[in-house]
Amino acid sequence: MSGDESRVTDIEGRLRRLMSGLDARPGFESRVQVRIAALAALPTDLRAQLEARRQAARRRLRREAWANGVTIAGVGAAAAVLVWRFVPEIEQAAGRVMAATDPMVIGAATLAAVAAAVLPLLRRLPGWS
Picture (cartoon, rainbow, N blue to C red):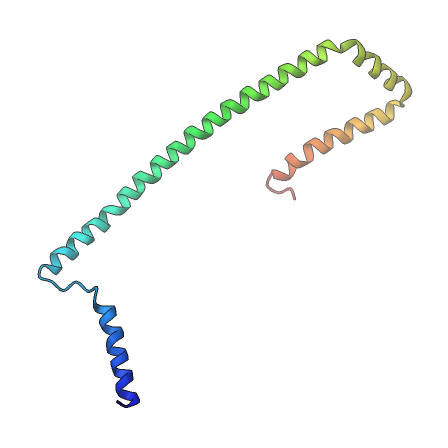
């Protein structure tokens, strides 16, 4: 057996393996049409699945939003109770700081704190960079 004959035999073996799964029985066209109809119905099924996923995500996010709101309300209530409990100590500390600090320094620090809080919000607006 020459080299060309072995290559042909090798190629024939590969082609037979490739074509072994080929469906050439009678009724091939009708089976293809059934497959095409199933593929045509697939986008409708996918749309329904995606809509169901979207609704599930909306419900989950709504639950998380309520849980976050309740948590924030609880933390706010705890902070209010804590401040209410320590009002005399806070007044004394603030009075000492106010007496020891120049009013211009307090104003500058307040302005800096407000600017630091507002600047990230301003950067989100279009036209600000």
